Amino acid sequence: MGQIIKIRNWANDHQEMGMEFLRIYLGIILFIKGVHFVANSNFLISTLMDAGQFDFANTLISHLVGIAHITGGAMMALGLITRVGALIQIPVLTGALIFVSIPKGIFTQGQHFEFTALVLFLLLLVSIFGGGELSMDKRILQKPDNYPKITHPEKSE
Image (cartoon, rainbow, N blue to C red; front, side, top):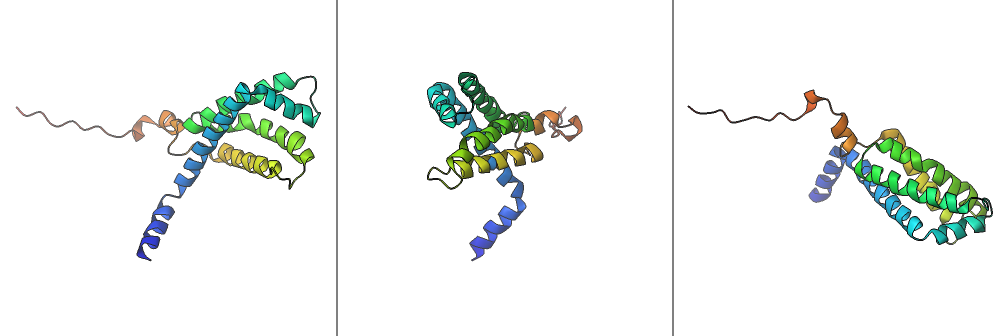
């Protein structure tokens, strides 16, 4: 019982870490998904053709989706301009939700709607709350007064 209390106290003291790990994980997964879409563009093109919405621009959209996931995912994973990285992907996920997931049905076997809606919700959270303490944003935007002090041992004569 004492161990559970220690874990709970640690978790309470480090609540912001949960959002950090969520941002990093989401960024990595979206980056990988983008690489998959670029490497296998036929998969995304066939998905778009099945949706029947964008016959004229399937190839262009498939490349834009892949690039958005790769750049936005990398930005989120590193915490570099994190909000922009999340915002880049919100239109992509919104389009996937409206034009691909909803027509397939809300509670289908593949759970496309639920998963897409969850990722979209997480992107909205990241775009609101930003990168956090473990981000490059924090390091870059940190004021010089807040830099850690470097002390040098005094010289002996």
